[in-house]
Length: 118
Image 1 (cartoon, rainbow, N blue to C red):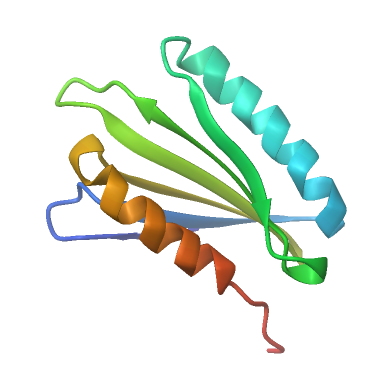
Image 2: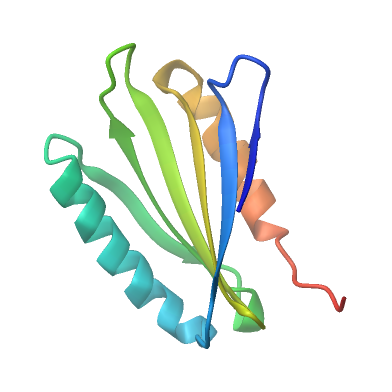
């Protein structure tokens, strides 16, 4: 698992590799299962946007929601991508105040995710 954040920790991105076999076309179904679970955990928060970007082997499925926290609302974006070794599950979090700026940046980042030959 990889976690990257700014110095204050209020902006972070994580990546986790779940090893196993998954086809790119199965990723949206996994996203839907995870979004239902997040909705169960945070019933007051609506799933804002579900989408799949890219094509072929480069499909990335996402959903986002605003989550109420003690120190203010958090924008949460979850993303998934099939890779040779399994499924990359990632998340991005920032304060609701920075949501608009980071939404665009994160979509640009996700559109460029590629698996390289190691």
